[in-house]
Length: 343
Image (tube, rainbow, N blue to C red; front, top):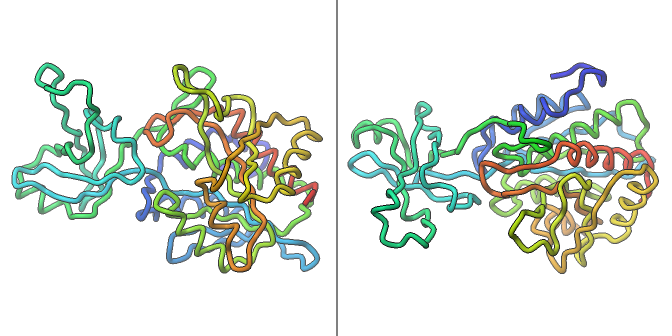
């Protein structure tokens, strides 16, 4: 990790964060790495849910407290059954099952095991048009039934692993949902080191978002924030898909507007972007946002909340893609809001 602003490498930080394992319910490795990064900006604690909480700088009683949340968990699978001939069955945690056949996976068993998700050769398939359901798939770890049962336990995590790669003007990796947002929050805190914030800042890298936002819900209850910002990913336009309601890669952060969000905070973010000449996009949602903002907003007596999203392609697959410029500009927008104190 870098030691000062001059050697802060956002892409390197993102690569570190995206590569570590942290499937929902098994986030300890991701939490440890996130805690290491956040420790540069304040006091850090990790709770029983593997939520990582950083209280940034010194507390000022005259300032309101802003909670900035990004979730650290990722999609994956859990082993549910081991056959007598050594094949594993697994249930999905958020993962798009269409990408699974013929994928290489890592099983986090008593020792790490490499496996492949079984795939019926196309010339043997009777229903070529139907995408495989996860219940129809098995994982071959190359072991006998006896040996597989010695090494693998029900509930072990299964993950499709890869590392961050450059793809033209984009980057692609597993876990950009939501590690690219964790990287953006870290960069925002780095930018704020040289500036005075109008808020007391608490950064929350929350667990279990992919299973229902339990991490954000429990952590926010004890943090007593006055307002909250949920930093997450949203859908980017892809060739051949309906483009309505989707963001564009390279066009900046997506600022949320929804009946469940604080319009005053949305407007403050828009003004911060305009004043600082940062690109931004509007994301209109008709009800709940599907992010941690839904949980943050109803904490205790209610907390004004808004979403700031980074557009990505191929969400909930191991090849999610994003523009580094969007991650950087999202960080700058967050820092600008904190500095200006427009709320």
